[in-house]
View 1 (cartoon, rainbow, N blue to C red):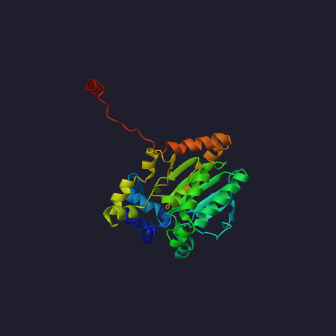
View 2: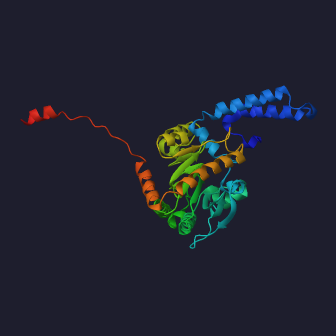
View 3: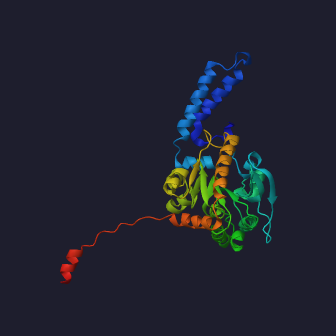
Length: 335
């Protein structure tokens, strides 16, 4: 892996990868793979398995933000077919941070909606690093309604730090449009599957995040606020000391959110993260989507909407224990 693509906590992994590369480059092809190369490969796999099986919350955030992590258009190339992009919101313009269009996944015709950050600096600027404007959420909702009209399931791939925070976006009704999307998706008469493939930041993620099945990739995160934003509020500064504390407190990893019943499934990533094996990750995602497309298509729409409603009513429910009242003493006092 190129040095610029390595994460801060991967120092030991990087050293072993460099050693393996030097050995492979110096090996004699006529002799095949040497025993030393095979040993280093095994050690590298064990090191990756050990490190990525126990990532901290802040390390998970770093993996979710990796520059080479597959994005919506990467999955379009890898697993979807016949993608026809649909542009514009019929009001302001075409937001490039949210991509929408008809697509085919195996035997299913679907409406695909997903965030796109871009991989190069030019793409980043065009897509605003995946931070959508109000017109992006209006576009997404219009395409969802179109999908419902033609009885097509909706697939939402979430990967955003949050909705665009500019003054213009607020003036054009950013918060109201996200709220409208939440309402309309809760009662959209067609199956919806949502997957957090990278970052799931705040209302920007929720704007396309209401569905019948909510899943996260193993090393994605989903949070009401970024660790940097949380650290800035709690400690007035986001430093290398406060950001990990904030990330841990937010309970933003897939494992945390599965235990809290905010998400339904965790989709396993290849060893070392989705950015190391994009095609393998795409095939795993495809299998997950097909499984639930087959399951959800057999549920009558009234029942589907009732299940969706109850699913969200359960999130955040907790039991509050109250101290028992001293009934006998109280009665004696009144007497």
